Length: 401
Image (tube, rainbow, N blue to C red; front, side):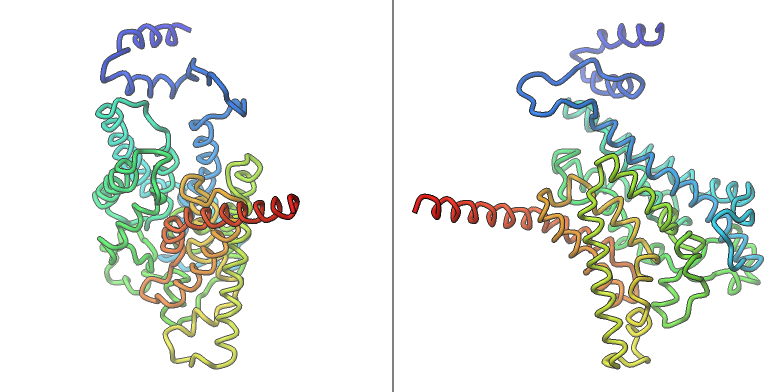
């Protein structure tokens, strides 16, 4: 009670000054705001932006923790040899050595992401005189989960600054951006530092000191192997559970699926977008499988390996599942109408697999597919609304005739 009273007294001191938004941001981080909605609201609810963002973060935390264990496991497995046929509860995976190795490498990514991003948010709220927006709470968690584990921290800091300023603040801040901020940051890294963002190698701690065995420990990701026409050495269960190399939070389809169910239950993530994206990916995968089966693409083609990949395996590899669940469903940049969500999600899944197959230099299409559909989401909604208006006008004419 004493802390709350002291903060209340300080709040009075800062009211009316440029520092008021910054102080209110810290105050509401600890306590709920005293203000409530006034006037003609249509829906009364206890949830607000901060609660919504915290719910999404709760859905992301299992992926973060698993990513730490997996980073340590991939290091030890690359050095000592992979353990095949593990179950999700295998002690070879869930041990403190793996967690420690992964945490040492991943936590700095999380810290840099939040420190740089929130610092810029604070600066803009002071300059523009508005309240601190909680939109970066989720973005700050998403970014470390979708980048390679060995990404230099200064690159991450530059990319976060670009994404927050150019991708969000120039459009007016949270709720006004037309592109997903986390994917804007990843796209900046992809085009500015492509050699670091290929994501086709396994990170191994102290790899430079182990230069004599570098070839033996620089294993490739599943997509990296397929893009080069190689067979991958992971079972379907390994890919489903997440015992595969890849970006921090993107490997475990199981945990991503559980996160999807949690977001759907909390009425934050759109099941229409998720389901339609999966359908779109399966349709594109089936088309490519048929093309490979008919021999329209020769086995010597650089596209053949990914085309010939079993269509539903595309859901388990790369960042497809993570992107569909946590970024395609962004309520700001996604379609708003129900029919638009079906179209929007289907095209994301369809284009993701198409880009993945036809871009072997960087065989991951979900980022580009989501960003592309972010741009077209307003157009999709426009035509859906116009179609509804025309149908209603036609019914009205029939009734009056």
